[in-house]
Length: 268
Ligand SMILES: C[S@@+](CC[C@H](N)C(=O)[O-])C[C@H]1O[C@@H](n2cnc3c(N)ncnc32)[C@H](O)[C@@H]1O
Image 1 (cartoon, protein in one colour):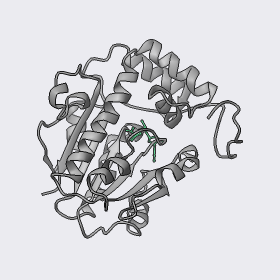
Image 2 (cartoon, helix red, strand yellow):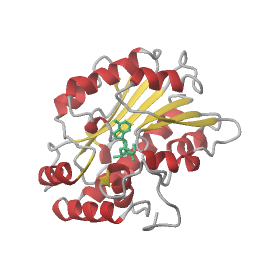
Image 3 (cartoon, helix red, strand yellow):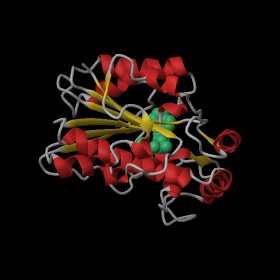
């Protein structure tokens, strides 16, 4: 998206205030952002220089987690809530590369993501992808909509990468996860990343304060204990709760830590 762009943004897209999906795309090196997103994103980078590394590590974690789930774990269904703008190696591309019949439902509440959703709907012929515009705070609606594409009687991997940090109340965030996982059978998985101030990340706290005064939606970091509470009742896969850059990173296992927890839990 170049400004003002060949396309006029729909009336629901706010081009005057920085939005997370577009700033995240800017940090990932994409061009789907407005001047306000780039200005705020660059100010955050000035305060918190490793934020670009966090975004790249989060996407690399997504790739490793989905490859594991679609491969060794035999998961054929993915519910990716807080999808973000299409970028390289979207969930359905990674999953269907390993399991061509994988079925993927994407969910986001940012109208700009909806505008780009057609790039997410390029399924393999054997599989399926669908996009649902919904708020993560409405898990019942998400499950109803996802049930049109996924068989919710069979295991599903619920992906919530970088999104529970926008549900500021921890009990509410936990309630969302619980409702989703309670509705799914044994063998389902929960894949999470979440920002924290417990893994270094110089400038992170000041940058979050700046974000909350200048951009939307507001964000919060969480402690390891709070993050772990989202995985209550699940068997947390090795190596447990780590910086997402270190999760099953193989020969990249000595990647520098980024201030973003990552973990995968399996419903027993
Ligand atoms: C940091 S991006 C992460 C994108 C992707 N999951 C990744 O890890 O690269 C967070 C995404 O969550 C979406 N989001 C934020 N709050 C949301 C909510 N309440 N309901 C649905 N989506 C939300 C944003 O629009 C954005 O696309």
